[in-house]
Image (cartoon, rainbow, N blue to C red; front, side, top):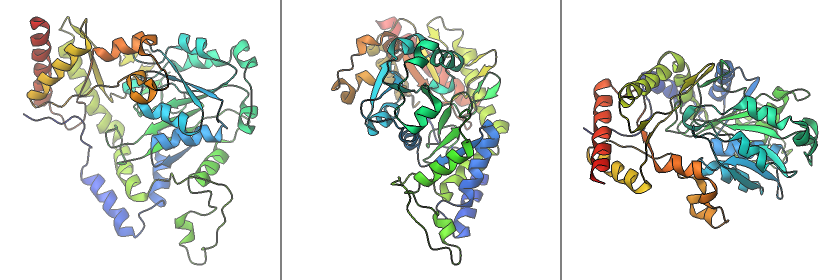
Length: 406
């Protein structure tokens, strides 16, 4: 049996929506993009939402808007994909990495120790679709000592007068926090719609705005939309109308827009997201839980507590008391049986680009301990229970074989 890790979910409704975009004669940013933005707002309860070409672009756009620049610091977890850090570096700022907790998510205690007058933004990352402790992060940034030490150097910073909470929710579309869908737990929330994500547009991302007064989130949406289209006052769809050719460039913007032909994929998927896609991911997740809970070597991933549920993006299984080398041997055994698994993630200090900047993995012991024992199992709606059973038995046999031989 051959089981891929994360194929996209493409059914007739997706094909029909994409075909509709192709036949419309309009394939770049236009009505389907706008429709997807409206659906994301409706789903997350965000006041406004802009979809763009990637979550990485989304993070960069937010940091740029908040005036983050060279000399500024942005706190991120050491346990995340490189894009979280690269977005910070691309605007010239310094990523300040902190360790995580046993649930893979950023440690609020470590955030507190890392805050300086140079700190402009905190980027919590909802690993595997499990939400961070946003209440604790909000409480932290509003502590008098931290708030009074905040040094505002841009118009937006002066308006907010505190550290911005920018959620990297790349994994957590559909997760809940405090009984609400994620999208409003932070000041600004960024989702990823990359090909392997729960909801995909092949490539893409979304920015959900939930800034407090005196900010106008709809006005901010308009600014971001302009900036994502090279600072051009009219998008191509508006320009294509009879007599609508004239435009101006009012800001040195970026090219970060999402085209309609990609938005069409997400538009079809979001319409059945809660009723089917999320339900089926949960089925697979719980299948694994039911079986691995019987193994004394298994550490099951967090997925629910009062008011919070996962988006079931990944199933990060950990094996107790094993080394990184043993974990790699287990993965080799699983691969021989035709099951594709993964590891999420290599902590950033293990990667060359960050080693060269003197990040030291020994300073992030929980990140490393989570990583060295973690194996991500396939989770997607197309997996049937027979396949899930094969995955479970394959993983169980591989773990037992390696543990018993060493």
